[in-house]
Length: 204
Ligand code: MG
Image 1 (cartoon, helix red, strand yellow):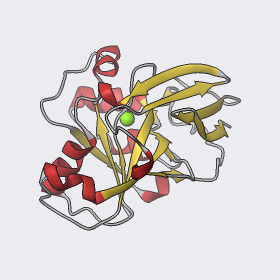
Image 2 (cartoon, rainbow, N blue to C red):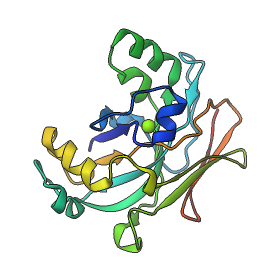
Image 3 (spheres, rainbow, N blue to C red):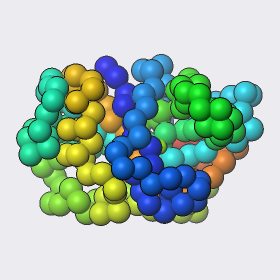
């Protein structure tokens, strides 16, 4: 199982980090050791002073494929969950300035908490109008809707499969809306997909 992720997929998040709007999706990966399940706590690592939460919809791949045409892409994912793409923003910023890879800043242990429940795609009436949000200590910090994505689920699947063979069980983080900020020990993060609570875990 691999974890793929898309950066810079929501315009207002691109603005808040002063990034360039991409003409193609920005792709990175995380190792499977990044995954946290069962609302396990996130242990704030000492190597960063600026770990940001990025709440994201996560696609689950249900079929192996490569070079998938966008019009067939919907057949390759069957469920949507919610996750956090934790990012060591200070390390990422250093890497960006030097043109170096983001692996450490994005892929460290525990950097990918995901919901235990993934909702079947068939339960959504419109994939281009799915809302999700993140609360920190009961205060809403991020609110997103797939209508605001630069690159749709189907486009992301088609694009990724040009370079990587997708396999059943792979997860794809699809980008975060604006509102990212640093977390600290004691914080409680709660994620919602539509109105449904999908995860709640603490930072230690
Ligand atoms: Mg992200």
